[in-house]
Each structure stands twice: as C-alpha cells, then as structure tokens.
Length: 161
Length: 66
Image (cartoon, rainbow over all chains, first blue to last red; front, side, top):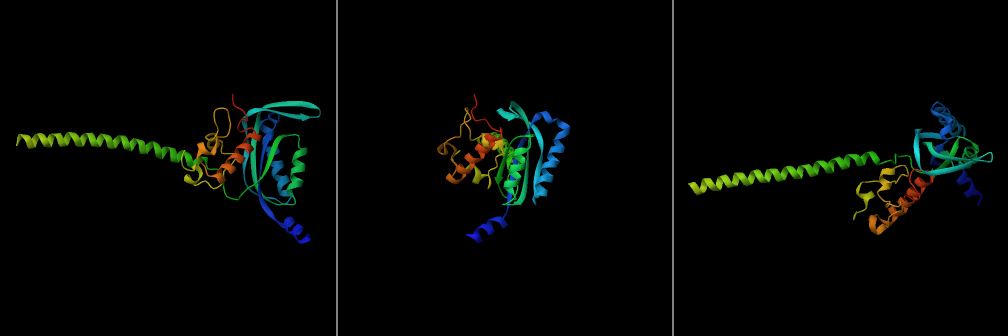
C-alpha cells in the first residue's frame, strides 16, 4: 500500500484548467489576473504547455456566485484556459487556491493530453473542399452538355455526308 | 450522419472548447442527440457527452435552449 501511495505522488500529469473570470474586473486587469494564475501554477511546480488569453464571451445561461453574502448574477465573463503539467499531489492545492480567488466565477480542472486537442480549424478546410467538389460536379455537367452539342454536330455532319 | 464523425475527421480527443463541433450533436432544445441519430461509436459518444457536459458547466453551451 505504501508503495502505491508513493507512486501516485510521483506521477506528473497533464491537466487543463478552464475558467471564467468576472466581467467587472475590466479589460485592463485581465492580463494581471492571467499572469497571477500562471505564476501560481509555476510556483506549485507546474510547467505550462499552452494557454489562451481570457476573452469576453456571452454565457449560455445566467450564472450565480455568492461573494460575501451577496448574490452576483453574470451574463458575460472572460473565458480562458491553461494547459500544464503538474504533479498529481499538487493539483488539489491549486484547486483550493483558485477556489479562494474572488475573480473566478467557475473553473474546471481536467486531465488531458499534451497534444493540441482543438480540431475546429481543420473543419473549415474540409467544408471548403466539399463546396469546391460540388462546383466541380456542376462544371462536369456543363462539359457533358458541350459534348452533346459536339456529338449532335458530328451526327449532322455524318447525315449530310 | 451514418458514419462516425470523429473517426472520419481523424479527431482523437474531443475537446469541450470545440463548441462548433459539439453544437452539431445538440438538438433544438439543447439536448444531446441519441447515438442512433449521431452514428458516433459508443466510445466516442461517451467522450462527446462528457465534453458537452463540461462545456455546459462553463457556460459555453446551454443546458436548455428555448
């Protein structure tokens, strides 16, 4: 049993932290909060793999957060994410620290892989390809019609001969 | 969608941030579509539903759309 515990502690895994920041902090303070989060991760022995700056988004539904016995409702938020490698023993510490931060509405820690998992950009290309293929089909039809005319002419020439 | 969308497009990891892809598997009310309708393999359907649920938690997708 002891050996197993030690192995669990030694494991370093790739995690992703997705988070929503409150919109009231303002555009100019977003990089500050973002920098602080990165510092917090590196101070806990984490190695940042990739990340994205928090961007203002419209939330799909209204969120509630109670801070100092006051209910705050949010319709917009700054959404950002960080992918990092960290020891599995430190992740709980990170969770506790982010929990106490008043700038976060919500956050989500997930186990993930090092590679880029976002595939949306690839699809736009595929859609374009599909569109071009449909156009090609149209062109083929035109070509066929031209061929028919040519064939008609040839037949007429044959009949005349 | 008769074929598995994810293996056809070579997607190995279904990301909760890919909202455009995830939206294809929601009906008008924002419910997750049946695997019979999506044609996604059982393994990918499980990953897909987890990704949608994570996206819902972070307000990227709705729980209920009117």
